[in-house]
Length: 86
Image 1: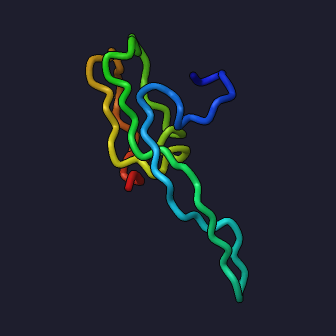
Image 2: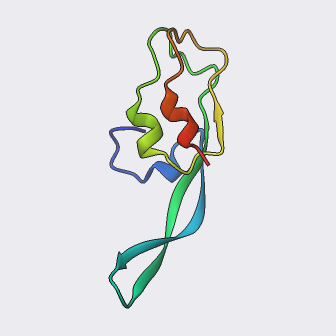
């Protein structure tokens, strides 16, 4: 889980894909590398009893295409950063 030191792609409810990410770029060359990125979060019915969605979540997981949160007790507004999801 969150504090295990394992890559998040191995966590329950997380789905990842391999994407090419620019790891270095200068005026003449861009170096690409394959990287596992989180594309789906399935956290429904996960005993998130109360709370809110932190804005930082959408910066950290900027490659999200699916976000499942139903069955939890989250409150408040949905952060505008959710618009950054791909």
